[in-house]
Structure formats: C-alpha cells, structure tokens
Image (cartoon, rainbow, N blue to C red; front, top):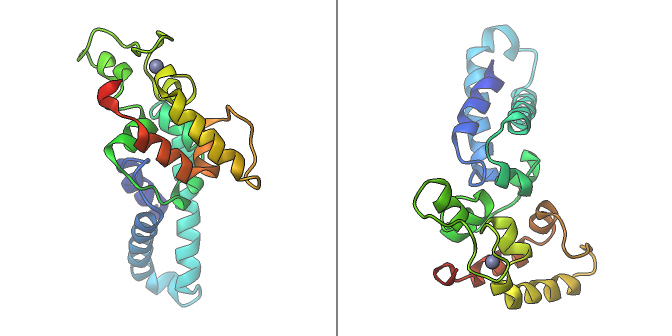
Length: 190
Ligand SMILES: [Zn+2]
C-alpha cells in the first residue's frame, strides 16, 4: 500500500530531524505517483487532492503507530510522542540540540553506553548518569542557565506550566526557550 511506502521512507529518516516541509514533499511525491498509477481505475471519480489528503493522513497514522510501538528512540519519544506535533515544529537543528533530543552524542551516558568512556556520571555534585533529563532538570552545573529559562517561561503566562514540567511540554510550549537553554550549555565543561 502507498501508506506503507510513506512510512517506510519516513522511518528511515531520523524522526528528530524530519521537518514538516520534508514530510509534505515526501507524501506529495508518493501521492502523485499513486494518482498516476491508479488513474484508469479511480482518478476519474476521486479528485487528486482528496487522494493526496487521504494518503497523507493514513501515512501519518501508520507512522504514529510504528513510532508508538517501537522500543527505539526513548529519549526522542519523551519530547515528541506525537509525530504530528513534531512535524509542526521547525527545529533549529544543531549537533547540541540533536544530542539533547536523541540522547546520542555529547552526553557521558551515551559515551559510556558505547564503551567510549568508563564513567557515565555527570561531574556535578549529583553524581547521576549524565542524561538529557539530568541536564535539563537537575544538573547543578547548569543551575544558572536553568534559572534563566524558568524566568523566561514565567513571563509567558499564556503557555502556563509549573516547573519542572514534562520534556514534551517544555519543547512543545517553549521551543525557543528550550533551544536557548541548549545553546548555553558548554559540553566541553560537562
Ligand atoms: Zn550534572
């Protein structure tokens, strides 16, 4: 089925990096191909736009099912459990942001997991594994930067939310503030 083609191509791309524009281009390309292939059978009766919309929606549903059921990407899933929400976000991708959203690279827990270093713990006084969650919500070395994002968050009364909040809420409601926080982190000091 066409929706399977979309999902097969979509899931091969890093979920944290695929943009809404890229997703639309992929879905459009496959939907147009389907409209041409099926033309003798259904194109006379169903407008192309309807086919494109239906294919996109079904593809997104299948992608969501695969994303929900996969055991991979736990850190990314903690930020984006809904594919649709992720596609709406225009992330200013950088190595640092990608590391934080995926838990891969730059983090001691990641280096330890792949045998690159012996110690997964953060050099701060918490002595916990240096994970994305630790850096955002608990790391004592980032207390100053964290205070800043909480201040900025509190200025935005409309978005609401106590601190700490879920990673998902943080990125979905306060993307700019989250990105500023990540950009303030000097990973060479961690
Ligand atoms: Zn720490």
